[in-house]
Length: 553
Image 1 (cartoon, rainbow, N blue to C red):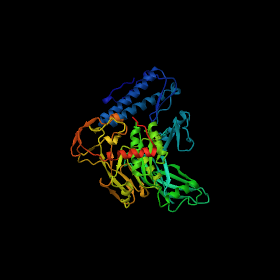
Image 2 (image 1 turned 180 degrees about the vertical axis):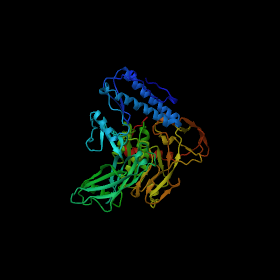
Image 3 (image 1 turned 30 degrees about the vertical axis):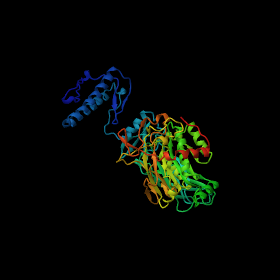
Image 4 (image 1 turned 135 degrees about the vertical axis):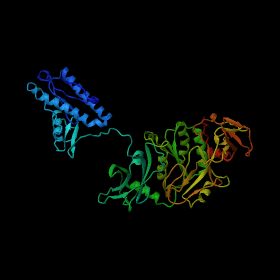
């Protein structure tokens, strides 16, 4: 008979006489890789034996974990019992035809793998070769050998993608031998791997050789990126490319750990496009004095706010100015109606970037669009401005913006201070309900809280800038000047761009002195009529330029 006894639950095998010999209809064989194979017909008694053997081995493992001092003896006893049982069954002549040979614990691994392969019908894994001499297949897995050690070769199959290696947004020629590619890169890839870029010029004239250059990359979003981060790739070749005017392709390679992860054509150039771009970057004069590059417009924007902002800034910047807007979902039918009137006069360009929602970058991918706008308009204006549509650039009444910027000609970049305005405080003497009163007329309370470093905005001479940000550029050639508010500043009407007029002036203050301080939400405010001074002139300018306009509620 077979009993279970001994210290710590270890397996002890005892054999009786021939009358007590096991009457088993099936034998078990266990290979070193832990797979059980069975032959013949399995009955209840055989199942019980299997269950008892497996239970004993599990109990032995518990012994090994709990009682380290007796582990060798316990293990030896368990395996000896198992092998003796199999030997006894195999030596029974009248049952020998129903059993397999006892397990050979020291058998060569290659033979075991071969036997496993045979028993599983030599099922081959897709795309592998079972006759290459390097291993065998077990089910859908391939058995390989390294220094005679058996290993199961597992395959990794990718379906779909969490993020792209590179999302192309724009590519522009910057000179006879230079180009720039603006796009999004997978942030985890750039954070945890060293991604480099290589540029290649393939001329349309096949008799000319290809040119290659190692690219320089910039990350202007300062780590704010989410799934994607903004990448500006600068390609500079050792000599001019495509100067024969016959066209060609700019090919970009993204490389990580020596692997070319993706290759794509960033720019296709024809004779016509080369002539157009080269005539712009080679010219000494500019088409415009000032260029405005706006951030992504999103949300339920009030068309009246855009109307007021455009009328004010077209007057301020003059007839040689241009405004680039980016629609990330905020340009409604009403906003388009406002833009249309100024677009007809050549002041406005609108880009539809609503597809950016597919690519999870920072704040509606605003770093992406300002960098694309920088390089797209780089040679069109001497000065390019970056600020938002709830912010108003301010120049003292005795001068002009053109004259002010000429005084900064020796600087590549200037930054200007913010004057933060309340979006709910108004004077009691104002007719705040009148439709003839614009928002920047009635919002006249300036936050004068000390000890706060308010954000600055900026303007650059784009020709000397390689990449840019939202509040300033860190990738430029030349000097930066942080100006004083006496020369140039901007008024910030935070939380007003989506508000209707009835949502403004929630608190009416009986104050007419600029020296008196009014507190709202524990912040001190004083009257500031800087913007109100220009209101009537701006309205007259709008009427003269585009005619009467409806008041948007």
